Image (cartoon, rainbow, N blue to C red; front, side):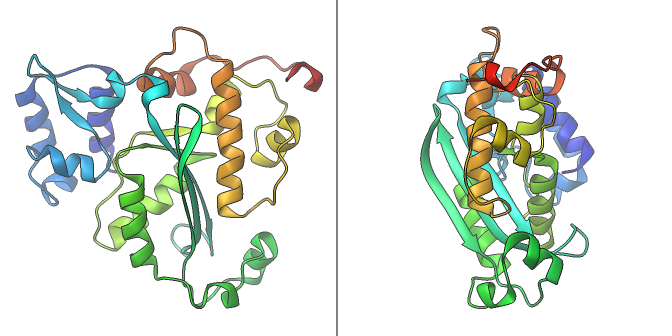
Length: 261
């Protein structure tokens, strides 16, 4: 996502702004005006940003007005054949969550011509596994619809979000504009632990499934997310409160494993 776009959405997440100021700012973002008319709120939502107009005529994000238990979160994990500039997504797993309950799932391999041996060793995914899988374009079109304007959640969210968003842009679908939340950051502020890698947290929390497979890792991130929600201060009420807390609250102190239940 363009820095100017990110700054505008962060501003809307923090407060409501005058409609004309919103349109003026958005109209000066090349990434936006090349794709759609900034006045078209349906296009903002189609790209993942639930921009709303309040009764007083001001503009904000719906996540600022939505309680955590009413928010739909999409917990995502991807496996890739390499880095963001050299590889492609070979598997996506995602869970849509509302009020700590799974409401839908998304899981698929993606066709790839090559998968390096070290990636196959790490994930267990080979070229043979994905040879009859749908194309990246087909999968990302369906995933965009599945994701909708939910909050994108992942363990190390900048990787998964950035990889998917760049892949979307490369295919002409436009970037992701969804609000995003990192379960590493959230766990640092709620779960006392020596380390915050998914493998370590799975052992700490007693989560048992195969690591480095997309849906399993999304399920593990969901368990971390649910545990974190138990330890939120009462002041964290809205979705934007939660996102802000995950970024800026002080880290928790480390205590013994047996103190976590």
